[in-house]
Length: 162
Image (cartoon, rainbow, N blue to C red; front, side, top):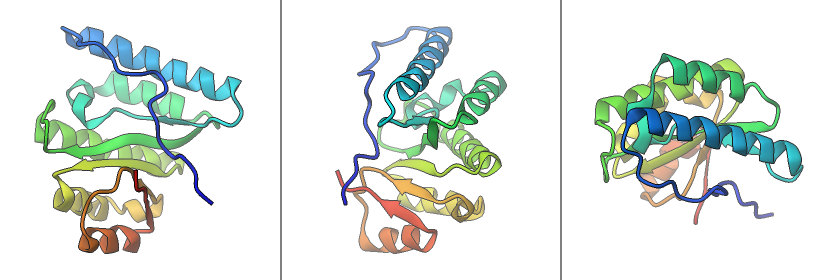
């Protein structure tokens, strides 16, 4: 059986000039995704802060996300992970947000939706250090090598090929 585990139903966002604009859009999009999942029973939500937007991670964002992730319509925490290609957020910001997403997934007992681009070793290291195998999840848009695949599978993660 094949399933589509990841898509962006709300489309791309325009360039936001300020941190407040980024936060406002993220809150609106998350609520819209959740409303869609409630309305369309064959759609389930996945909520998180993408690595590109990790610079927006703060206590307020974490609290809001934790509240929304508790909803039964939310099936995954994420999209989260690391993206060393674009570096729209610093590596430190991305790593902090990634670790916080893993901890949120563990608290809420929901699997993770992982994004990784040009950060294979760091992604696996953090998943291992944070014991992400406790919640498992999926590496979406898998484009890494066999060694990465084996380590991810050893952590009980699925691989998604786009």
